[in-house]
Length: 429
Image 1 (tube, rainbow, N blue to C red):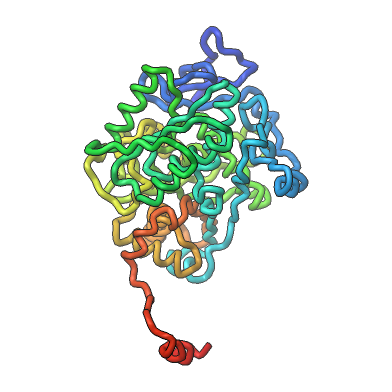
Image 2: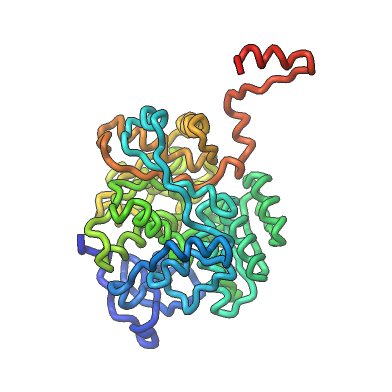
């Protein structure tokens, strides 16, 4: 598995081979690490290249992890050799990372058909989603570049995360979001002091394109979900999985996919572990999307090598709202190169999966539940073997979108004092 996604060409004049730099993921054009724009001129995603990554080592983590409870040691310190920053800035950490990897349990294994299903529970990060890993990295970048502000485009999770980490670092934060973003997420952003700009009457993709264009014009760095620095934070999830599985590599990792940064970040982490000689194979990623908005999954499933744009859609999985994500072509290219899988989930399938997870003890938002629904379908079609070791990433807490709970059948009753005994005796407590 020594093949990489692309051959790195020599950096253009002014980019040092001894320092981290950026490279476009399909055409291989190099850019300075400090580049303000997060995409290449042709729209391709950018990726951080760290020279001499083949010599990187994972640091002994036991002492650092224990110390983090007292002095705030961060995931960036534990994986410093694999990260592009000059310093790791532990003072910016909110305690993100080292999230639980737990067996799904008999009930969920039976429902999906997968005997070795594991759940990577990213909902226990400080702002209840995986976004915190990327927000820490973006905050470090802002501090090192002596920037005073951070901006992002979000449907909720990333906005809250950037607002929290920006507040920690003393940065001004501005979040642009669509009008359909859940009220709980909007309030959670604003409480940290962020300026929240709710844009009405616009397609999410159109809004995103305009914000990125205007930010570049005015010299403002916008960290969207596919930002190369954000990806550097997401790849720490791969390092944790490596440690939690005692150096073994899972067969598949299923990831809810919207802006593409999360799935490519996890895979980049495993690629770099391979480059460093710490693993001898790569996992196969599974691109999971909602059926009503599946620009990447639809392309892969149909055999197309071109993303299929979605517009004016609605989905209960509001966190998966990128209908034509910049960088989607790269994910499709990776899928064909590395044998990745893709699957979608219909609205009712998402709700059923959310209920199954909740009944097993995991309350996740609908976007997270798409993974379980997709895995069940992949097993039913015999695409995945029952004995394969599969990791499903639970990306965000159900508290992010509490209103969805009303879509489920809930056993809530009202009584007065005289009725209490009726329920106690009925349950034989």
